[in-house]
View 1: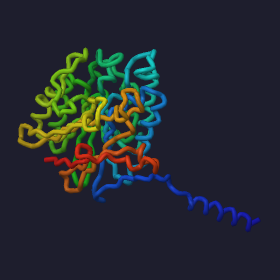
View 2: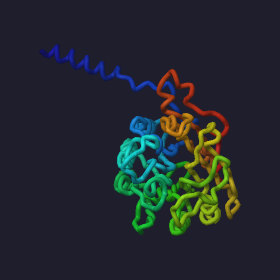
View 3: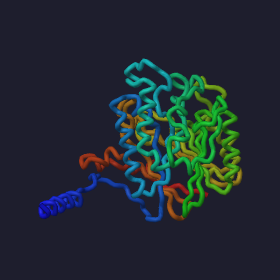
View 4: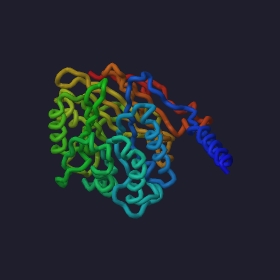
Length: 355
């Protein structure tokens, strides 16, 4: 009997030690072992509006969860538009086959992959407000993403601003990330088409954390031609758009060093759904401004949601260079598509210098 038990134990141990990790033909790596990264998720609404697409958004967040160690991921940023419609009950089957409740549940389910593992920062988009798209400031983000949801926020969430109802929510929030090579970083998430009160709050927060490098994350800011929006045709009011955000918040600030946004997309080449520019702020420092969206990357408005494209932002140990790489964990999963897992044109793979 003892001999049989020994044989069974040996057999079980052999099975465990021979178990291999899932095979990914393409596994991104940091270019410098002393770097860290942040992952940028573009607008996910077109994943969540169709039930068949929802697993693709979960694929993205599951890939991030599995990459926290290998890529030394410090945080995840999402450009908003979590849903196609914030408050509808009868989907038309064209703009999605899910009710708003089902869309918010899908978005929440995907981010569960990251809860208590890493801090993620979400900003609200036009589709996250009103009934279909920003008729008013009704938003269900607070229902699905309360500040207590992710245990990692206990350390990183340092400020929560007031929404239009005067309630502190994550529609306007600030998150702190302490690093060895970049010092202290602060990511401020700003509501879609922010009210003056939200902009004033963000300015005070940036000033309060004046020893931090500040990244501003907001949904709508500039076009694929890298022109900051002056006005958009939404009913939501009062509202500030890209140029006003620059003039009232970014330009006067001495420590907002980068603006990240999404929102814009067309049925067009990759280069027409991304943009980048730099401008000097009031102190003469260059401010990087980056727009990234992918929801029509498969060439369709109502397709698979964006081919799982995301951006890996590698913060180099020099404390001033961010390497941008555009990657699809969907294409990376199969040997038949792995050669398509990277977008390597100059507008999708480039370096940003932070001053």
